[in-house]
Length: 183
Image (cartoon, rainbow, N blue to C red; front, top):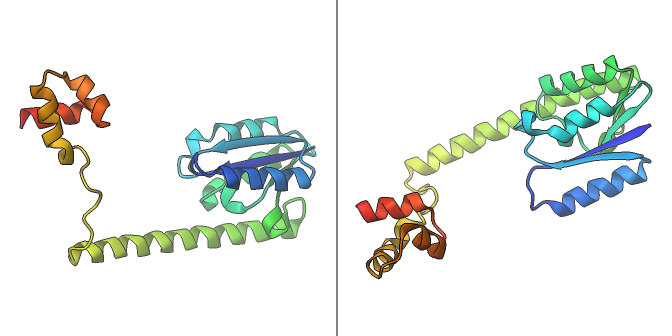
């Protein structure tokens, strides 16, 4: 049986999820497992766990791209070990890799290492860029939203509104309201 797994990192990536769904159906997947969760939080990927539990001997788990399945080599190898232990294989459509062959297994391991290396380099560059921007005084982080509404909070409070109502009306947390009122 061909089993598809599709994943996007955020809930607003519905087009990406739909594109994966279509590609997996074209590949002949009879059952699809989908989720919208970050790959970083492996524990939260319930549908991947369900897909791996569902797989039986002779089945093939299909994903559109490697980064939809695993973000690190250890996790990739863990998924491969699970599939291999069940007598199943993995196919990655975007790379033309099928672990049912020895060459496919080798290529997947090498490409997984390269993908992890690339991600680490990107994160390192990002951290360096943020540090450089902070040193130049150009990186300030996000603007505090509640403090910008301090005057409105005070006015509503003076007019008899309670903290819960103020928070709802201004779209800020109650903790922010209390913080502003106690200042």
